[in-house]
Length: 124
Image (cartoon, rainbow, N blue to C red; front, side):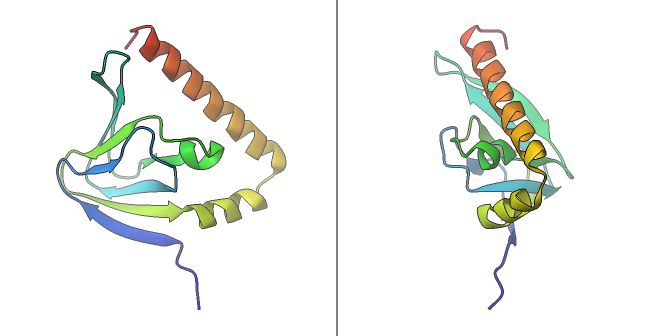
């Protein structure tokens, strides 16, 4: 029996794909539509980090460093996503150069750190 690595799902306007703090069990590729990425501030407000359209990938950081999601992703309009599960991602990472894998981990940690500092300092 073949293992299915790629799945496709349609999300409708205002559907939440994942929340900040959720486990990172897959990464997403936007086929069509638009995704809003937001993060909570210390006072509970949500700040927009970005809007992503077709061809964009998101949710990859939690797959790389196995940490919880650092932001929330919401469909802005009807959106079709293809997602790569953790099993496929791990298979790809095992085949990659160990240096590149280590570099990715460092980059993700730096992005998480800078994001936390900006949000905590109110520099958004």
